[in-house]
Image (cartoon, rainbow, N blue to C red; front, side):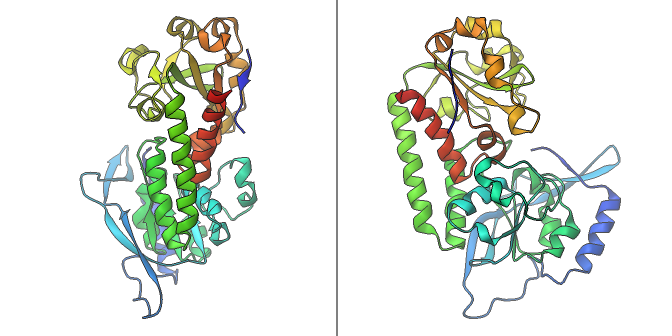
Length: 348
């Protein structure tokens, strides 16, 4: 068997951290999003829709944390056009800014392993993790714009005290959703005057989607692989896009997956399950490789039981680019890389 290779958790903020944050913000000269001075008459500004979440404060086990109240509609945020210094906690935003030629504006990112195509940003100053900002480091970079999304949404209000902040969450729960990614890319294109570049990328992505939809007439299993184990995803899940939009037929309906766990890592399945499901295609990604735990997907899938499935026998096992799908998720290049991988496999 030949494996085809590819070219919202809670955010805890203890009381001590809140006090430290207050000191950082007090000493920071950068304006807050709510108290920013009015732009001069000739300074261009862009209104970014659905960019300000409403947070609610919760407590658990003596820890205070914040989550978005999704029952309250998001508000728009006015930002200066073409900011010179951007701190982004959203790797999809980093991906898209790179794709549209605005990567030079990024001055700080969270500490996370980046895919090879974003390696030039690996040495940028680190501003905490995807979930927990280093507020002092952020303030020290004197950003014009801060971008949060999904994993960092709960820190929006605190970061907005440092500089104008927009939250570019497209979908929740780490869902791969190209349509949502394209909407946010269009907003970034407007901020940086790169509308035509975004439109061209959008056209390529939509063409890939259309080509795949025209070719798909088969069953599939979508799998996360890590540490020798599989997690299966069905329609309507964070990786349901491959069924719901591209048109693959689930080899096993979501409600019939073992346990119907609805885990962010998928429902645990075995090689015996794969053989019984007998999909025409196996679409997998190496979660261990994406998270820095080591690559094992190709080796895990290379076994006798998988080889006896239709997918294994016909070399219909696709390994998607793991970092793009699991870490970056909905950036322009990530979306195009994922779809190109599938399109190439189907066309072979």
